[in-house]
Length: 126
Image 1 (tube, rainbow, N blue to C red):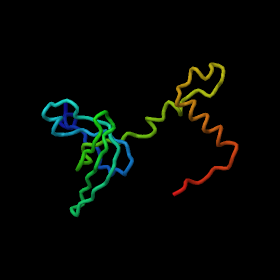
Image 2 (image 1 turned 90 degrees about the vertical axis):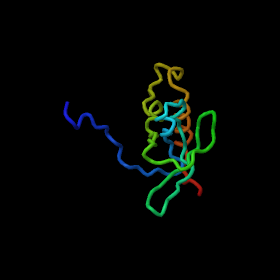
Image 3 (image 1 turned 30 degrees about the vertical axis):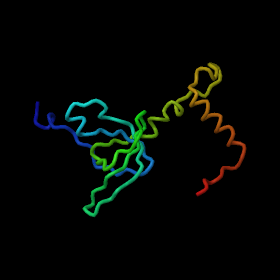
Image 4 (image 1 turned 120 degrees about the vertical axis):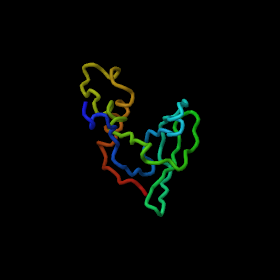
């Protein structure tokens, strides 16, 4: 075993935006062996410091709710939309097996696509 294989790989620094979904690990709970150290959150606020560091306010999405303040990026990982939407993107489009075999999310997506296909798309208001 060489020295490079025993070194943990560290994720590149990432900047998160409001409304990103992330996995957050509370370092204090993790290193002390406490339960509940990893939770799914939504980025609720971005707090830049004059030093250049950025910290985040996270809204917990578990049953406890609440905010996590001053979260540091090295303890967060982005939850990619592609992973959440994979079942819709890979849903079968043939009708031989019937809609019962599709997940409800895929059926909802296909229904929305059918509804918008017959009219001009609109730009979001904002």
